[in-house]
Length: 202
Image (cartoon, rainbow, N blue to C red; front, side):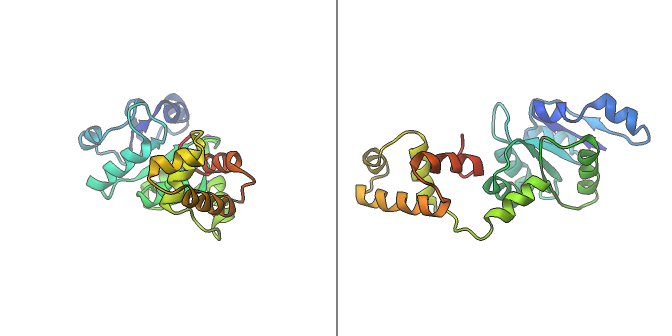
């Protein structure tokens, strides 16, 4: 089985010697840990790919979208520290076959690789919990996300209005909606929730 590990942490969580020792009857081939590009994917055509969302040159989500755009049959497992429900949804909508958080045991990771190779889908317990917890909530609109991103960057309403070519009253109204939808007590709390859930980037 050919399994490129995209990102240093993915490689560390998938120790080659240990895998070969525990499963000598299976053939596991590993690529480098510096991130897999679409060019590398074209060359190696891996059976399963472990994709870290945090990579040095491009985000794992962008790489996932690019690879799946050209190879819709690609089996990609997202392996990350991000637990937010919005990040999970983005990855699964982009075509990830599984979403795992980096605190799982070797056997669980190996079982997921085999399941994905067999055509199944998997979500970690943490990811499933995050999705269930926020399933009934109203999602932020894109204009609200844009404002939340500027709030997290430390901008006041007047600055946000100027940057987005909006009136200050419009911004105030959208901020009120953001706080209500996220269940946040104030702007700082809203920004913290936004980052934790993967609505905006840290």
